[in-house]
Image (cartoon, rainbow over the protein chains, first blue to last red):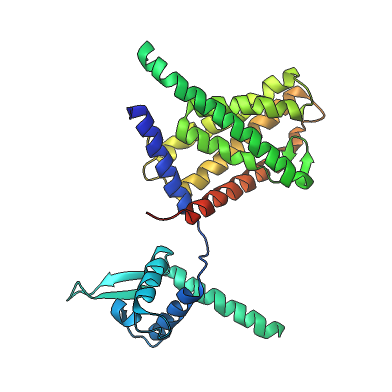
Length: 117
Length: 184
């Protein structure tokens, strides 16, 4: 590939990467939502949750399914993984600002529904 | 530039020019079909989808991208003015000139690298605003000179808003397509 063509391709890739950064409210499928709700219940108690614990949080979904959904939630920017300071094999799941925004939005919707109802 | 380099670049640049021109005309027709009801005049619409293309074309391909826009806008301007009048030749280059001007103005403040490395969505937004502003101002200036009833310089605000909304709509459409593509 000539230098000129590779430069064009690089510019294209960087532009695509910038467009991917457009703010968006992520859409969740039913399992992702259940996993996120399960995590939220633990976070609300002030407890920490590891990936391994999260895989057992949703009894009606297999651990591998939950693991896949955790990866998707991470890709959607709703959870972040942080390695344990003492054991790097243990990874904790933490809510991101987008997750807090998601719950706040759902809360607003419920308030609105209650008020209109 | 040597003759050898020029010979190598020519087919690629011609393909870029033709492709961008075709895409511009396609987006123009799509906009006319989808948002005809939002049209204030033939030259100003509250949503103008093709506005996203100049910025993308100039950022990725540079001058060949701008030449493609010039070719495309020559075709669509003839539609705006209803015939191949001198007004077409004066108004058409503005859509190509605006993104070149916007990128040239913003290159320093945004520290744009030649490969666009590190380009953020914030930078892209600022470039889109700069492009919409340059385009609206250049077109208004030309319309003022032309003194053509079809092209009213007072429509500068409609053009600015139309360009911004059009750019946002297209960028979000691209984002949705990218999100739908399988991850590797």
